[in-house]
Image (cartoon, rainbow, N blue to C red; front, top):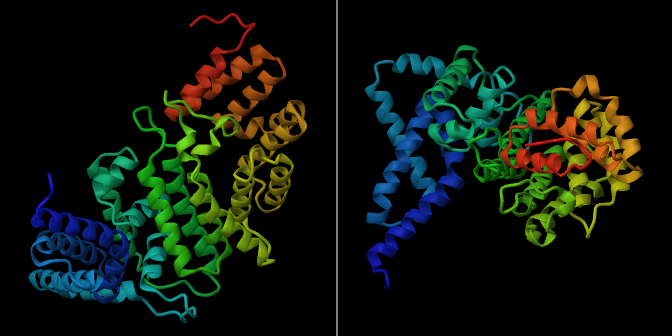
Length: 419
């Protein structure tokens, strides 16, 4: 059956609205915050503008410039809202606090969307508040969507976002770009927020949660693309985007049809996304060609470029990259990754020796026990491997990972185990 003109027009309007929400939400909200100085006013007016578009576009047609239409409509909604409220003077005082004193513009890096990102990721806010506020104000996700992503009640997430906005007003956190001196550390904080969002999607937690949350990984990548568009010369921004792309490229091969995690060496590389890999590799090569010393995310992106280059991983290159990374970040997690790579390059004995040096620091981390279990298994130390798998299973909270570890444990022979 062929759809009539009315159905086709409605579908076109719906698609245009979805596209506009993805591309214009951040710009509309940022513009309104700059004009009215209120996160609440901006959020509510933007939401009303999109709701109005959902009603009017199927009837009136898609406007020639959807972004301008939405901004104009949202501005009118905000003005109407302020006129209706008796607290207008209080909102004006709040606006003066939010604007703060303008800092010296950072050349081309002067964009209202960038101001919004830095404000939502301000270090004065708790990390969980930064994540929630970024997803709401920058990403445009609804409160229920964010609540589902982080396995909390809608009311809990709503309260978290409300408290974050109240903290911005009460603490007079300015809606502005950081100074040139503060920019590197503030960019690092933004990248941490985006990385945490991506990780929750890439290795989702919770027994009743899908092992991979594509809506979260996709949103993190979208926000990283936006940040890269706004500050294209920042190497760590480029590195994080490349890292996300190269990691997400393997998503289709990471979980088996039975819901079990598939380790890198066993993945079907034919399922990897060649377009994302090519884009990620290009970003890594661009940073290498700059001749500048790489940062943490650039080195992690380079590791993933090695993993996705050719038919098998060159573990010597991976170890060399982790050697560089440990000079920047000698955290237990980085040393764990390096130990695993050494085990692949030099053998299980060498890898295990490095892992055993991390026992006191990572005893509560499931990946540490899983790595030990695999190396002990390779060395034929079955009883110890079984015990390590048990520890990893008890600590893991990703369903696909637990399924993989249980199978690996149950495959062990020479150990008196009964299910």
